[in-house]
Picture 1: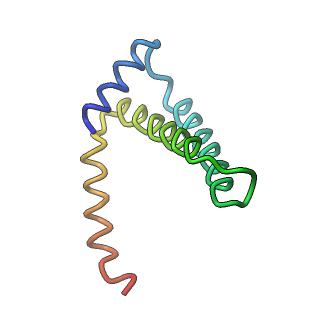
Picture 2: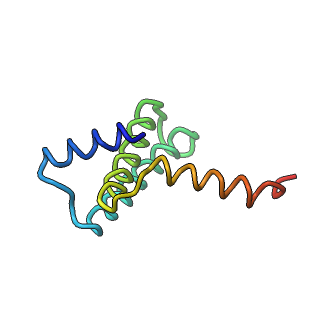
Length: 96
C-alpha cells in the first residue's frame, strides 16, 4: 500500500500538486456518487451493469482517498489495520 501511496504522490506532484483539502473532499464525494451510480447498475436497479466500470469508479474513490491521506501524512495501510483491529474487537459478538 505504501508503494501505491508513493505512486499517487509522484503523479499528483507531476500534475501540479495536491488540491486544497475541501476540494479533495468534494472530489471524493463526486467519485462516491459515480461509484454509487455504477453499483445501482450492477445490482440491476438502474441501467445496464458493467464490472469494468464498477472497478474503474472504485479505483477513482481509492485514488481520491489516497490523495487526502497523502496530504495529511496518513499511512493508509496503518490506518486500515487499525480499523480492522477496531472492528474485530468491537464487533466480535455483534452478529452471533
